[in-house]
Amino acid sequence: MPYLSLSPLTDALLTRLNVPSLLALAPGGVTDDPQQGIDFPFVLLEVREGPNIGGLGTAPGEGRTCEIDLRLHVFSRSDQTITWAANHAVMALCIALLEAAPLVVEGYLVDRFQPDARTTPLQQVVMQGVQVKELVRSIFFYLTETSDLLMQQAAVYARFVRGELRP
Image 1 (tube, rainbow, N blue to C red):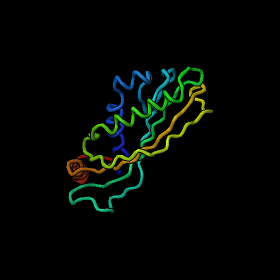
Image 2: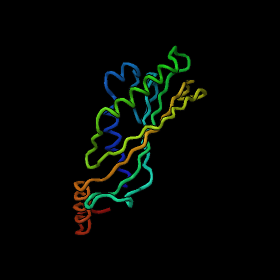
Image 3: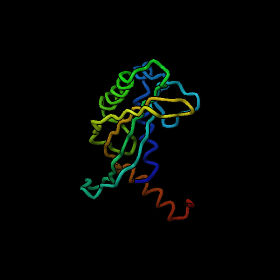
Image 4: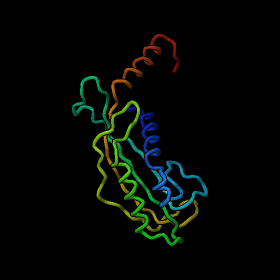
């Protein structure tokens, strides 16, 4: 699956999670690129592409399917009065928001959302020179290219073959 598939997926995830109810618990919001001086607590979203599993029977006319590993990291300052329970509440709300409705990603079908049952707390972490508490959870799901995206890719390839586009 092309690397660019992760950009619309990340955008959809950030849109789904950056809502007032979550921002009330995590004023730093949800980001995939935390900036210096970000407010704590905040959620770091990490999206990684897993193995291509399209050989397991994608429907005719559908594209490749790959596993996506979404990792959510909740960070709070160690010197704040925020407890582990508050970090768990942020994580639980993230999961609830992701499970609330199917995720819409243009050109892709998102399927089989499976949160990992384990949430891992990490205590001795330094981020941007600040001692933080970190809570990590993985979520797995599948991303399949739809035929509309395949048609767009075929059109771009045809233009390339005709010499209309250069690498």
